[in-house]
Length: 168
Image: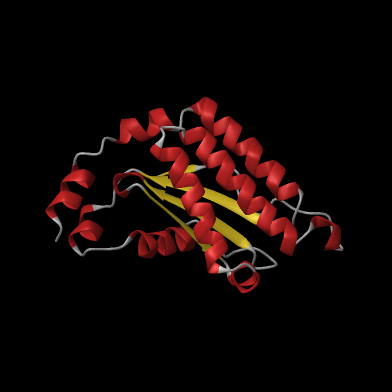
């Protein structure tokens, strides 16, 4: 086990995450998600986790593995067109991961998802958490619009997943 990583996770205060993603910031993020989803049939979820649970930390769980678990827990896969996308943030590791359901993953390259992650991480590194989350949501929305445009769907878009960010 990496002792530095362990200490970062153990001593990362949840209050800091709540302060960085305040109710005012959350409202802006909710509006950004709703706007992005109106342009496509895709669904976007944002989950922010302060630190890994001790059992996951002890076992050396990677951020991408935890993101996959959160994807399942939040049921991001539960959309009609299989084009749900999770933006997962692990504050203690300063890491952003994107997990896309099979419909979106088949059409959007891993390099494009990674580019969105780096965009968000750049904002976060500069202390711009709300701006980083909104920029990431907008970019994911642009990718979903390119591949799953609302104009191409016979039925009106339904909001299949909550737009509220989840703080874990």
